[in-house]
Length: 315
Image (tube, rainbow, N blue to C red):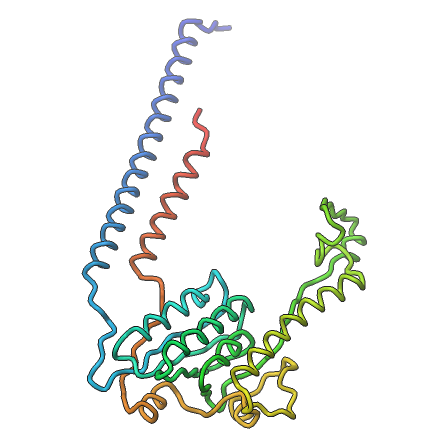
């Protein structure tokens, strides 16, 4: 049997250790090289954003006949969505401050969303209407203007919709699932620690008792009452007093006209031509700038890569 030379074994271990260290150093150098390249790219993107923003010309110039100022309310209305109260009102204020604006139109295509965001927009529009009494405020509903979107529309002087538009849904809903019985059958134990008997209200793995249900129903009813109050304040005597307008039902544009929920079937361009005698529509909607999106994406990419590297253990 041949014997292993201890010197050869020690030399082999040293060689492997040297190769491992070299490999780790090479990998570390490659990662940091990529990191600094990403940082440089992100820095250049931010510089590009600043330069191009400073060089932008005013896109809201109109001809001698003025223009109809349009602000879009599209998709879900929520604090973290594109259609949020701050963005909508910022677009409206920008439109009203422009000297060429002859009318303001909310271009609505939304099924609703947050009642808080909708009410903030409603109150903001009422305030701005008082500041600009000579500018007509109108809403035009495209495919759908329901729930929170109609809430907002009711603040305008007039509402228009296509005959096939979906309008209404004046109601409040809270939906979820209950898994208490399923969890019990599957032997799943739900562990919730809270201070306050009703802190875990609406937990899907806990039963909803009568008192909790009545409380939550009262919360929703209060929000519904506010919704009704806003619609009545905006629409007034135009509403059909005999109809069940506040049950949460939704109607098409033709039915909505008969019920007093809308005032006609004009599109934005038809309104501009017939009511303002102009064929110019200028979009004042506040949307994320493409360069801002690029910079944000690059920044997120750098942060994500850095997080991965700092969490990697090097041996």
